[in-house]
Image (cartoon, rainbow, N blue to C red; front, side, top):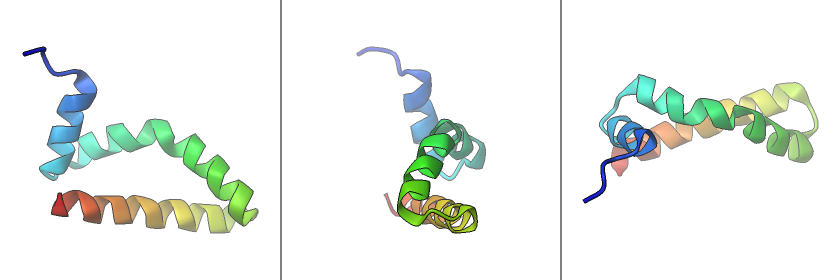
Length: 65
């Protein structure tokens, strides 16, 4: 069996509730999330709200999985 990549390890840790691992996984996606939100919502405040909501929702789903 091949050794785990750093990202695979972070996913496992995040699934177990490790906040730092979750942040490491989400951080590189922030600009992409913002750009998508900006196209749809157009207002910076709405984009920030959408990103916060999406991140919160993904943390909630992560606890179920």
